[in-house]
Image (cartoon, rainbow, N blue to C red; front, side):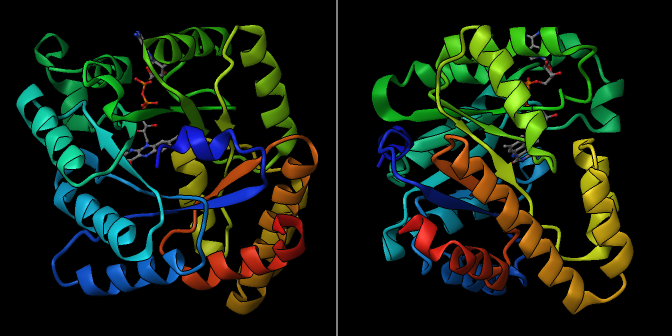
Length: 291
Ligand code: FAD
């Protein structure tokens, strides 16, 4: 099923993100965790793509398993910046052969090695180039792109970031998923600006439940997200007590999602990080709201 069908249903729903294992030995435990999340019957599940493509086969294996054995629509992520055209197109063919109809088309992060290399030799510089190539497959795929309510770390200003975002949508993105954020007002402000810029496709806010004090620094470093005082206080108070931090993090994410639903968002993507218990707790907190 194409995600546009789900996103246009006007029904409140949650989707979950999982990531593939980095090694063969971790495969079974990751597969099991993703299956437990699939049993929650989310509206869809996304499977990330390891930076550089090293674990790309696992992305497909996990996505195929969720779709075939649990009937959950899947979104396979695909990055391009460190790949050749041949590798990317072979991956696209494999995704198609697996019957996966949704691709999250990403550039991927720049590694220090890439930063130092000659950009003129890169097969892909930006996600928009991958989106244009995916569009050449006709209606085979529903294509998604990433967006950044607090601007992408490499962007100098939001106006420029939104200009390039519009280019991705015009190239063929049918929906956009946001980077994590901890203050919903930043999302509402971003929505206003992108709608004003003529971007009309569905936006899926991405919410990251922070359930471990040690996760905070890494999450903020990766995303550059603003930490509201309310969230900082919670981490200060409970960050060193694992069970309390988990409960508080789940409650904070639940609260964010309720506010998003109350303000017109219909699907929220939860960065569930292969944690079925966290995904289940959030879904259970919202049981009557989701209906
Ligand atoms: P782009 O859209 O190419 O944007 C990158 C930067 O370039 C931005 O500053 C943008 O403003 C600018 N830009 C865009 N187009 C142009 C242009 N034509 N000319 C000049 N500048 C331009 N990474 C992974 O490795 N695997 C994953 O599975 C993964 N999943 C993600 C899912 C989501 C929802 C998000 C938000 C991010 C994900 N990432 C993933 C991280 C992502 O790869 C990085 O954020 C990366 O740095 C940018 O990817 P992008 O697709 O947004 O790039």
